[in-house]
Length: 585
Image (spheres, rainbow, N blue to C red):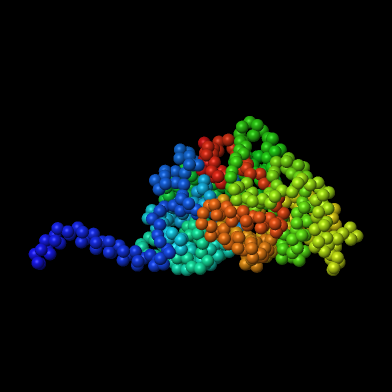
């Protein structure tokens, strides 16, 4: 019997060994992965999409909107209005210099020809639960900081803890959803999410910049403070020179560790990037015409229509590029602070919206170039504008506005809009910071004068403006919301009741509405692209019907003036032109 058993074992040795290996792997799985039966595991991947599958296969060679044959060299020089007072862009304090994001790599890189998809960068690949209740980042062993030190799991955990404690309120809120951080394998970091997480939480963690722990924990350094000492980074550029508050210059890192990754091919082609700061845009524009910098994103349609009739343009030295895009355009708005009693009534907000004469402003100030914003996601599939009323004359709109004021308990008395119960006269202030905003505000104020409302226009410098924004210290304010093709957690920061009472949030209108809370919260919980679009439409309708802001105008195009030796790829992605893929010929 013993002889037969030994013969069987010799004959079937491979089967016995295989069974033991399988048993060992099963034990490892249950040791290192969550035991929750819902948290099944998708196969390891180097990419993740918010909904559906990523566009690019695992063996892709480059992004379609990048030119892998673009030459390296030259300088890209741009202008910024205002000033900067810190090189630490990881905290809410201070005004960080432009371009700092290019000095630090993220766990994963976002691409711009998909609504919201990420591909491996510092994290070479990931494991993620099917219900996205946890995610594991497996770090690329080649990833390193500019001093040659490898990027480790300690750096990832340090970055997470720093952002959770000192970052922007939106980031702090999302990072607070992490229930546990661990290192299940060498070179891997796992984040387990607790109550309140959604499908977007894992992706928000994945776009976290990774900071060097050994640098920020060295004696004399404090990541919670502003600084003008160039910090250590890991990205394609590093700071070369600064003139505090006036200019900053970056140089391309020749041995950048990730330069050959498919997601970076054809990117970061300029040897130098420089940002010069100007007091206002008029001065910056004159500097561009004088050749002091070589690429300008134009935001003033009047300058685009008339200001570029100059010799460098007619001679071909400067090229004017009008580039279409399919992203939600910026939502420029006059925002009501509904925390103030004077704007608490929706009838008043709707009445004042009727008094904004877009047609006159568009014709007389903007050469009829703009479209009226009729959504908080204009120019995209996410928009769900309210049904348009038949074209009404200014007189008809004024009559309707007066009826709405009457409903709210106001009437014109002695040529002043007056509260019938208290005798209070309707006066308020419009807070702004640019010359263009001032022209719009003054036109609006003149329209309001016709119905007895005195609107005081106040222009302040950027630091005071930001401080009053953070403290919600205004009656009405100019603000521009930026939305992506994949809205999510940020909508709670824009419109949520909790954000309305949180200084520094972007709920500038002070919206407190249970329905809007639910709609904004549900967007990030969408299970498909179709469901996301449907839920965004509902939120859009609720915001529009609440008249929390007076949406202004949008173009639906990017306007870029640049020297003719600066070139762009032929393929423009849905989010618009990606300057990181341009080059100097």
